[in-house]
Image (cartoon, rainbow, N blue to C red):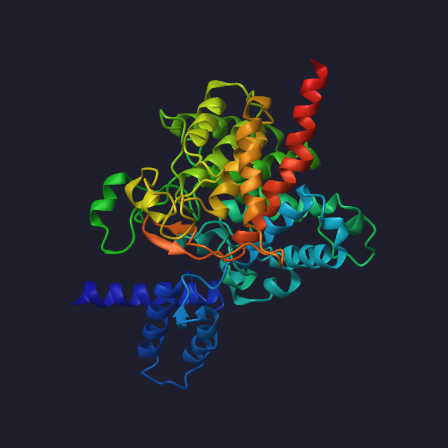
Length: 448
């Protein structure tokens, strides 16, 4: 009985700390419900207790009213994630300065969303848990300076979210409408340094980057997985997506701050590049863990190699692009659904259940194009132009693209609806085609 009482007290204390570290949002809806009920029991089942009332105030963060009724979301949103992709897409397409109000709002959002980095967030109870002793006690990675998937209040930094937030800010800093903006919120050098500290500490021993924490265990732990829904959840792994995102963030930072922890940054980049090559499959593909699936991973894998200086004609890059070209449909599009993730094989029927009659879809096509156009290789021009025409033909008269099947996934079998993807990624792909791929190919032709 004594060990059980000790265990229950420890678990209650751990959950109470998580509540304060996340402003009672908690990392996700599963432990949100568990923590809330546990806090209620701990308070003597008093629904008027201060702790339980603070939990109740955060319940709406997870509720979403859809066309077919109310749902409980898998997170408290994807605000920072979606914003970072949207703003990078607009910037690469040359559109960000055309919409200065939008661009400045995004800049302000990134500034105030950096975790435990604003005056307001440092006054919250969460900041008291950032010291090393507290992080060790509660098995928390360093948080200060990172960016979240959703909101600053959520409090959990992730490697790729931190990197995309960092890249988003650095992209914005170069824009005319930001440089001329006298009321821009200040982003000190130290805040950028803290962001890179988060990234450097999330690199695993294999050179790859995990999500929330470093790899702290072994693959056989999965045999103890108590969940009937989630796969590969017992430890954090290195992922092609997190690795490339982190690479991009480190390289963007390196251009602005070439002397800050220069050797560590250079070493991290070199190790990450080797990791991307090591996990590439024999057919040239990478397995995507955070969206559906091989097209998504190819975008990250190809771009990761190229930003590290890999030649566009290297075997690693060419195999990846030929893999994509081999899965392009007659109508110019690409398509996958979550079966690719679950089976770990490219879905045989593509997106026929959720896309068009040939199994193509808007978002996978944009991802594939982002990979192929990044290489800027004239030998891929027919493939690229077919894909571009597909996206253009699918655009609606309103300028929107239609919502198709679920494009996101986590833990192998759980779908995530990213409604912003259907617009952000086609804009990005078309922008890269027009402003990067076409000029590069024409310049190469002129040189010969």
